[in-house]
Length: 522
Ligand code: AMP
Ligand code: MG
Image 1 (cartoon, rainbow, N blue to C red):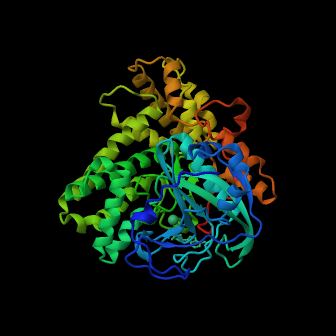
Image 2: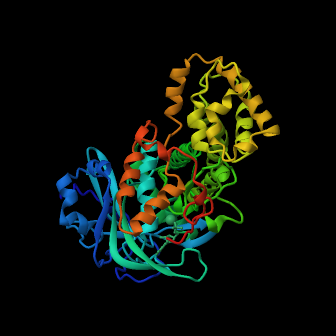
Image 3: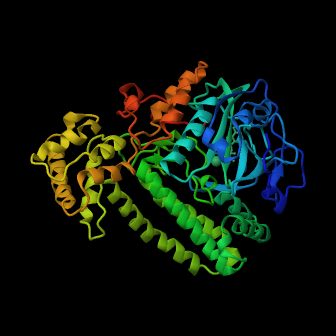
């Protein structure tokens, strides 16, 4: 196994001079060197062939003893110097101080085919940032991260990736329901991959400590490697940097709303500076379309991170990033202009995205009610988002029967009987308006269907699907992990033999832990 190792983060940025692995506040440094923990009996569960290929690994490499050892933390490759990053963050709206990679250990950066990747183990043991926790991860949450991050990639959503999923062979104690009943679970390690794992919180921590010098060094590093087109450091390039981060964040959020992904913990330490979906924890997928839904049990009361609030929170987080880098610029106006622009840009992009979901492409003054009413109607009675939009592509420009829409999208309603009376009336009105608007489109029904199917996935990682894979894996059966992994590589394609996954959430999953609500305990 030969990597083209090209470390930059630990070569160009200030390191914590202390190398002992004790929990502490780390000042004036971007990271601390740390060695992954030795595991008892590591074994591989799954490897992403696509990600392996991106890194230049052969089948033989993947099967080697060295691969297993490196990606479970038992061997540190020559010429690498693993480390944990220092960052802070706002958690649920409050400044939480230093957080950092409490259980993520960066192994190395590699270059292949002109692409630059950072490789990181999640769950490989404690670091100086582990605070009161153990630095480990359990199989349950590792399967969720592994499957979802690769699925998001194939959906075309900007995201960190995953190379491998392994069991550590160690037992890990977790209190899933936070009710004083901790139990042992299988420990696991995921190797995550991304151009960079930098988060908003990496910059915020230096602002909080009034260490403008180190923050400047980190911003300059970020621009040099990830936004090289912005040129040499200057106030102007810092503002452009902020604009680029805001644009990337916005882009990611529009994708989340398009596919019905709810992150669940949009703290500023969980927002990537590159606009990648990062830190798959208590995330969830919308089943019933519901702006108020949050998958995270910790968020149940205030629903700060609910589906419909994700764009606002993205903007809130950008405000915090603006505050952090302000000392480098010294003027609020250009940063405020970027934040102001976010709102209008988001509205425009969101509208275009929603139009594409319903197959309208003409650049005209769309009746604003058409989209608003659609979102309202979808929430009148529990309506499966994925089924609704995918099946909507079968609607015809010319139907004679006004009730024909039920044949097209009826399957999406969880309680079909509720589509009666006023609810039925509202849908009839909507479909009548929709149909007349479709009449202005030039595409044929077949062409439109093809286009709609490229933005409305047929298969997403429904919450219960991940849970089924977890339940089987707990018993040592990994077949479903592979089945879902393969299914979700082609989320927009018809896969007739996999039609069973194109269905509403089964009733047993409605209130089951892991299927409808998720704990942060991972
Ligand atoms: P999260 O909410 O998972 O993004 O984590 C928030 C912070 O807690 C980050 O600094 C994590 O690295 C840290 N953390 C989460 N779980 C653990 C764990 N089991 N051991 C150590 N640190 C953890
Ligand atoms: Mg995190």
